[in-house]
Length: 74
Image 1 (tube, one colour):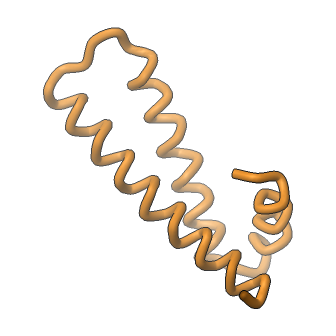
Image 2: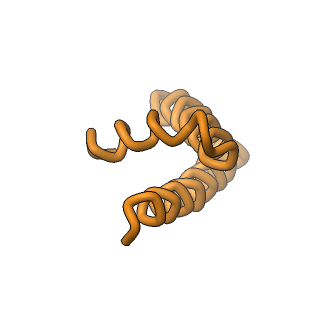
Image 3: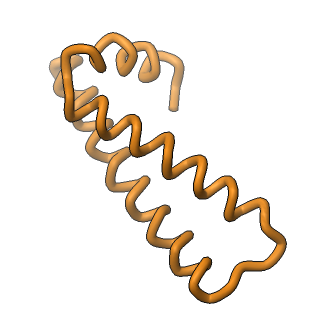
């Protein structure tokens, strides 16, 4: 994410519980994906889990972007 987005997220988190939840989930998914991506080989189950985490992270990122657009009045 861009620095401007991160600054706005930090500003809005205390006032917006949905954004706080989405941001925490985003960081959690990112960490789990990093752990899976560090592995040389993934089992079929791990690959499915990786793809599911990617989808969840993207869905959350889209909603975060929507909240930021609303906050900017766009």
